[in-house]
Length: 138
Image 1 (cartoon, rainbow, N blue to C red):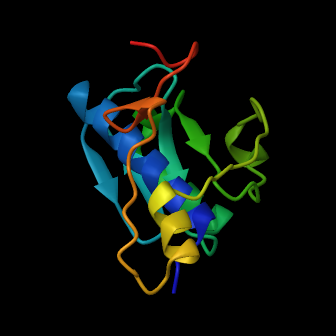
Image 2: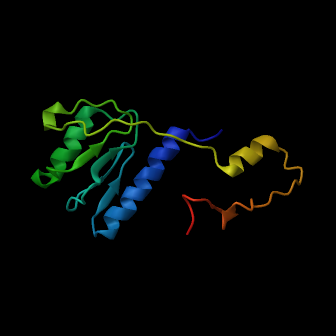
């Protein structure tokens, strides 16, 4: 069974945020329902990210209450755009949609699921697997 692209995007974003926060010496915690950090607020990074569609507003409230008053000022990334967090005086900064693109490996598996030995070569328009063009030149 293939991974749900939404779940993969959320987990990838959590990995990124976790890396940035830890680089700033923040402490992070991963639970079944959320990712959060209880260190100082890192500018432009959330305090909490929902990672389960089943996480409730009540759970968000309790997680933030456990962090204490220092959690004030942090952002919450509602991965599923389902929370009403007026109780915490949060306001929506922006709304967006997750986007996904199948990897080349997924496309190859669909085109050649039996692995017939077809050799795939890196396109001349890529360098070390990275697209090369006006927007991607290094």
